[in-house]
Amino acid sequence: MEVAVLSVQGSALLALLKNAFNIAYPC
Image (cartoon, rainbow, N blue to C red; front, top):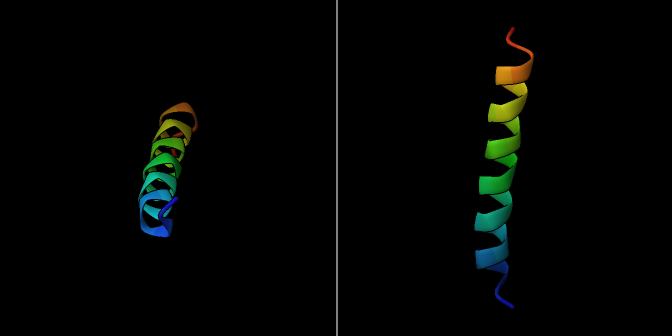
């Protein structure tokens, strides 16, 4: 496994979760 690939996937997943959270609970 490449750390860079996992890092990119992790960042994308985190951004997706943040986006979903902001839609569910808008500030």
